[in-house]
Image 1 (cartoon, rainbow, N blue to C red):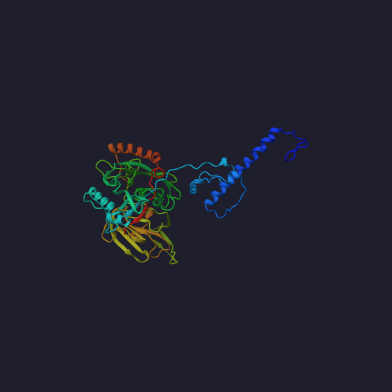
Image 2: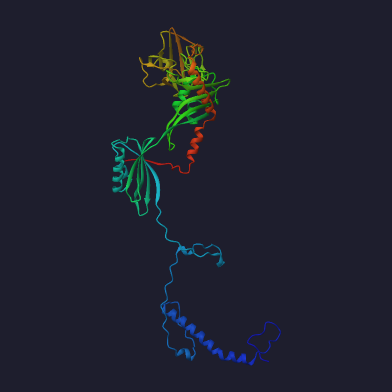
Length: 505
């Protein structure tokens, strides 16, 4: 029995191999050995040729055919490419399966990224456009060309000190310290803009844009918290419009007794807006409603034929009376007319007026047309103003923090004009207005006075007014709210970012 080189995997005996198979194995063993020896020799020669000190020379027995063979010159191997971060793109960390790794994608080198941003500069005294651009390191050739183009479209008009210059600027990667001006805009009025833009060839062009201005009707709704004027401004109404609203109401509304915290109001405004959405006028008062406990006080702006523009009730009666019921947007009556215990002197004394509690700085209005007969400090009254309206009637205003513009003895004032501001000067425990009303030189209760009746419209004026009044009262409920318009403008996708503000040096 012929045994194989290794035992079979089981107890069964292998069948004997044919004689010719053993002969083949015997003849080819030297050949296989020769090929293996040649492969080892070539590997050693390559290693020695590359100068690898870690490879030792090993002598192996070789067949005679190989030892006597002529050496074959080997080609210089190409250096391996340098490995970069790009070779690892697509590699899945933690994976051991080669199929989970995606091959790197060859990408062209990206173009250098340029940053664009908006910059707003303020023109200071002795500044020029060219100097402002030099301060932010704009190249000289660009700033001279920009200044030249701007002067050409301004046509000898001057840019006022304090005006803002809006720039669209690009920082180029090749020149990071020399920003490129893409556009420059000066808008001295909302309806007029002077614009310089950079063209593709690097030159600049100038143009003057004139925007169409149209009216827009909006409403402002709010609730009274503290001052009615400040509550309206907080809700989005301009301060002058709220002052007009308060003056128009003050003939008919007792702010001390009727006006309560949390009461709602609505004002209708006419804004002027350019074709690109910029407001040129924040809003002229057209109408307003104040929701009191038992009634709604409404005022409507109207100009009758041949008359002056003013405010009227929905019934066509003028809101103007001979005197205002109260001379300010006050929050409460803190002390009435008559005998009382003086809070500072500590004894009972006659209180010759009415005290209206209000926030410091609240405007005080002239109760009627008249002349200033006193304006200055007056003992316990503090800073005090006295007006003479007729030979028989006068009014006094005490504890002011400061006088209104131009208020001094001898000047004439109109009803509703601001004559001072609430303070706590003189003998006062806190900010308030002490208001006095005089008849024949003697103080009387200002809250108990009866005033003249109002004028009323008739004929064609009344018909036209009724139609306008109905339209305005509908818009007081249905016109777009200014808060919604402002919110929508701020969410537009093309709205520019908040500009960076800087001043020229």
